[in-house]
Length: 525
Image 1 (tube, rainbow, N blue to C red):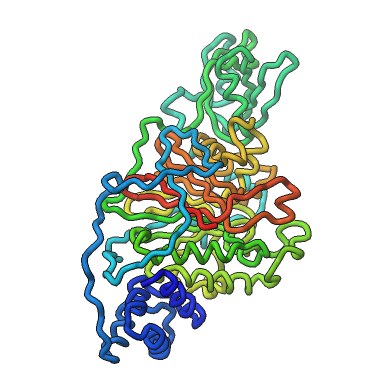
Image 2 (tube, rainbow, N blue to C red; image 1 turned 45 degrees about the vertical axis):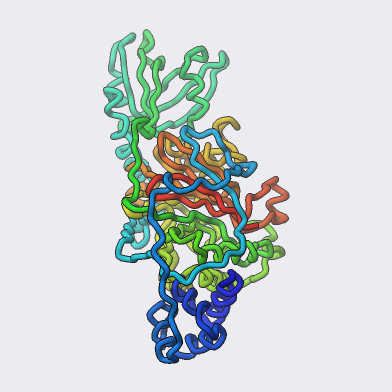
């Protein structure tokens, strides 16, 4: 059974408004009269059905007394480390400097003969939960008190990560201490500036007030000051000046991920595909690459890929950047989502899909972003995807995946030295967010922050996987055993991207083994 046959079946079903389970497609393709069986399956689809199931196809075949091929066996769920290693080929922007580089391969899907076997897929084994979703929880009105509340919550949440390392004293208490006293403080960075002598003056603010801290340029910790962003939470320890008006800093601490962190893994061999930035509606959307990806998901090679996580920007949107209308293939936002839904139907109907919005999607720009409204959910309902807010933590069979679209990466890359964060290696900017335990630490620049009673952007619990998009660059690595993946995009370079010197990495699908957290790269362009 050539791949072209299954591809044609999937596309024909999508044309009629259906997606399908993988085994359902295999059964149709294995019938003696493939075209006739496909027509009968569509003709006898249950009223209101959006997905063609294996049971429905078997009913049609039984009614026509057509033989159903027996499955030749079950594919082994052996752990990935016991399987044959694929050829390793790192893409040019793979960003290899990780604590423990994940295994990676890059291969273009090839034509396969497929199989008439039944797939060893038991939906009852799938366990998915979602935490940190702002959807339906937004209470902010934009008042000054709301902004005070969100930063107070940020301080209280992140200071808990630091209290084991310093004996914190409030700013007002330090002001009353005698000169030359040892002092330790936890606070949000209120200001950072260099002195005439090249030292660093960092103002820290807690719930009682502000206190100035001086980091001498000859201190080892001076390099850490270059990583600071305003509004992030840190701790310092040192000695007060003779007049007690300033704290000379000896040590500086970030909330950070413990170096001893050990991630959770799934109890069986199962995989998740991580993608983002599809941008349907753009003239530069790579439809052929998407179809190649969707076709590959129907093959034996993708048997264990049971989850698809999409980290925002399903569509190109309207009015997102200057003169965007000149680069649109679909100018109506609802039609863009309708077309995205059609492309999503090419994906196997038995996959679990989780989606969060991005800055091009039709939701509010301020973060945290709630999930799509009911109208858009209805448009994208064919696959029964789980739709949640940005950011959200999605736990899949015990593996927690922090999904964040990634607008703050622009801020981090703009503010920090290139060796600390860059577009060519976006995972290094992700490391900074993990280190700060906040997905959007700096307010007032490129970031739009929604004033809520609670800061939904803190990383309260360390994730096992951190998945972002937005910057259209591929990058991956491990930071203190947390797998960080920026998954590239499905849109070739636009005129706007060319004007701002963005050369996108297009058509990649990072595949994560949830039982080992090893990573494989698949390229479809």
